[in-house]
Length: 271
Image (spheres, rainbow, N blue to C red):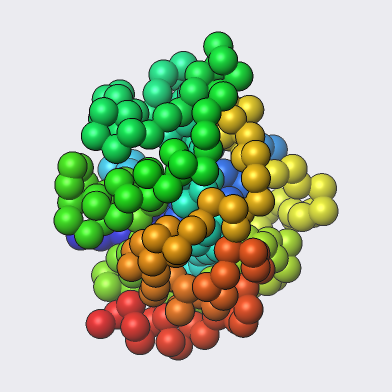
């Protein structure tokens, strides 16, 4: 299976397992900058050179060699599951994508027809009942993850543990996993392990949010979106994420309640 979702600097200074909706645009730009001294001009997900990616056939041998030899620090980042699924909803379901279209073509019409989700549009200022629509989307997300219907689960709402486990299953070992809620401290720890051609001043690095401005703003506090049924669904879908990555099962609590035990992560996800 190899190492899907893995990016690596061309200088082989660091290896990153991408987890969607967990600051991956910012991490990728930092990696690019550390090699080249400037940021990629555009969305780093679109870069086809300047950064090794498992999706590039010409990168796979180098990534496989470095990961299996543990020749560079390997890391990833995680995010509060409540905030992450909300971000996925507002970006991928409600938002207009970079190509000017809805995400995955017929996905939104399917959600409207089968789940009664509303998403609004730029023409009406994205006016719709966000709470009701999100809760209906969450039912859909559960169905895709639990039963793979009416479609396979999407990477943006698949559990973080599922993404992170592929790296472990195929022979990788993480040196760091940090929460995006403590991004600067976590990324600084990673950079301290690396020797890069260009130093990175984290205080001067912008946050690259490629989905910002393409959809509705969240109108309510995070906790307002989660009633009893939504909480039940969140635990059903993401219980490993809460348990492994130290987040309280409370949508009003954003930062992790405890640190991440790498030994525990490797033991659980390596099974």
